[in-house]
Length: 234
Image (tube, rainbow, N blue to C red; front, top):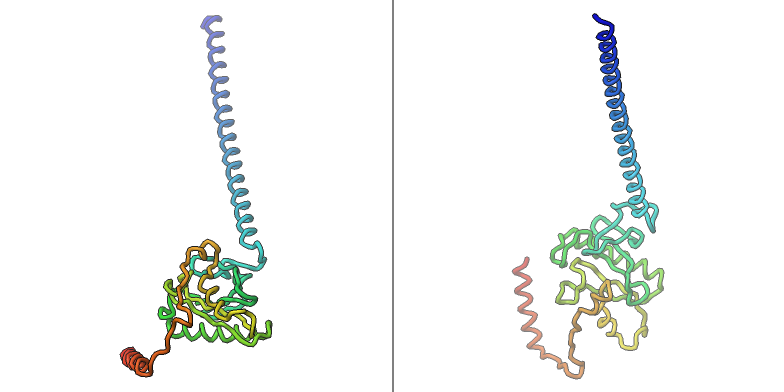
């Protein structure tokens, strides 16, 4: 082989080696960059998840460090925080009132969301009223009251603002209201929120002077009808 041909051959071979080396180096650099990017992305996701978990934990504990999701209860569509519930049984719970009519005005609510008393099972019904009596005793100790209003608005037509069985308990005192029946007007217009209260219609009740006493015969006839209905329901 001539000297010139040999020189060209060596140069061409060196060029191929350099190109191969450059290609390998670029591939390694690309792979290294991809791995670094993937690792960075993974770290970012883990950090974001950690921050999200921390924020959720912080929000769920706001106002009550020991509260968990299981401690909250539903009153219709309203979520009641554990810090607002002062007594719980297997089938009922008692809570303080967002808009009390008098000091100590509280609610006793069935655990299961049911609109009407008649929708409750017997054991739920019994537990509800036993809880009412127990709460009354506690309120009597606290407020030293000599009477209570215990009221149920059993259905929307009766003024029920939340379609979930609940019983109002209001401590009362002799002479605490100028007109004692005013408490019923206030109860009729009660709702968890002001905007809900404004939507309610007031029941028009005749004045006492416009109401007449019924005869004994009229009352006996009505009682007879109810007796027949009670026998049918047994």
